[in-house]
Length: 553
Ligand code: NA7
Image (cartoon, rainbow, N blue to C red; front, top):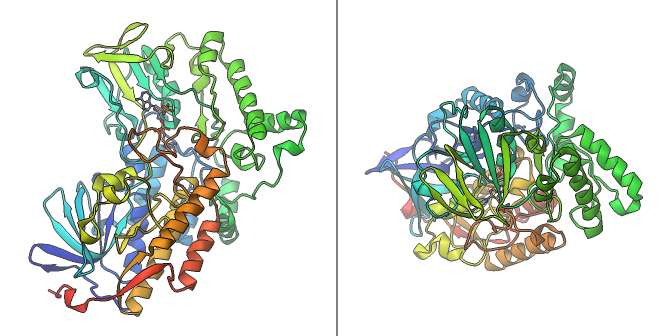
């Protein structure tokens, strides 16, 4: 294909590119590679000091892959990459994933097109030139025809608004912004707020070292054994030998992993048979628990309750103190909050140095410089760990708040709902593409693979525009509406929207409250293919305004 500008060109104080990419995490890195391979000039920006995104920031103790795991949480675009990389464990620890991502950056020489420690603070679309202009925290301006927002679905941290929290004078850390220097818990009284995936991974590790850990729990959680184990050389050899077949299976699977879909309803089995299956999966552990489960746990109340009761029974078996076990009993539909993998979490409550406070009956009143005060009294602490999650999926794009046609801000456009088409594009924001944004499978899919597949679609779209002398693309109003209806219809056929979670935006006050991810599995990729085949008929395509193109330097 022809590129309008292979090299960045400067006009005045603006650098010009074909594509500006925000984010150098798993998605942004692939974007740099993919668009560069297409012959486009690219520039990526990231606030961090190096590549990795969420894996660069989330280095709290116990941080590990908590999805289906290695070796399939990986890119698939390069067979050589797959052949040369060794994974040591099924649930790789954060540093191992970061090593891999750094290796990808080195191997494909990606860093030369990425500017680190640079936040994109503003992004505006110019209708005359059909280009986006971004401004960075370093005072630079860059212009590009296409803006790729690979900003991360779990990147903007959620800091709770609790009276006096900023007065607390001890060390305070958020799991999603963990320091690079070692943090010592030795001899310290540590309070942890949050019992989601991060808190549940961190609490047992902190408890091994700290003098005392006070867990401040708002919602008790279902958690399942992580089942982490070494990957054998034979398993790695098999994955390498069957790379093509495995990749095909990943493409066909609803979640992007090489597993067969489950076809059996829990209600086809007797209670004894169900229990036997749950027990077997519990003993095996890992995300395979969910992949090998019945197919109606997320859709049938009765099926859901059978699993919920099983897990509640396990918690009672593990936790010795019945009062603590009571406080740990989850009462929502199981798996309607992000399923959690744990390693020693429930056992941690059998230690003398771990106390659980149930914030539903004993809420936090305020912090002082040296303590947290709950209704029942004062708890002196030396350190506060916030495992309070993220303004997920839409939060980081809203923080950037790009301005589209007529200067309309995304905050205005998304005030009631995250309007989008195919989870990639937004009406009024031509040539802007989201990765893992609302309306896409996002966090319900193998994220490196999902990023590759979305980027491949965007690449084809860009090629189409260039080949047909088109300058801009944005969805039609009716496409957005139909897509929103499809997303909601699929979600509303499940139990997911019935539980407060970061999937429904319930963790962030004021956020539109609905289930915004596309739960149709691989149908999503059929929809993307149809849009390409039908020559983007769901979009408005605008002829290129030649006069607006920047002059080559
Ligand atoms: P999560 O899953 O959003 O968990 C955050 C936890 O913090 C959760 O237990 C929240 O309770 C709790 N929370 C949040 N705000 C407060 C306040 N104000 N007071 C008390 N407790 C609060 O984030 P994670 O980082 O654990 O996991 C995010 C994803 O990262 C994870 O799913 C993996 O995919 C990787 P709540 O349940 O909202 O009542």
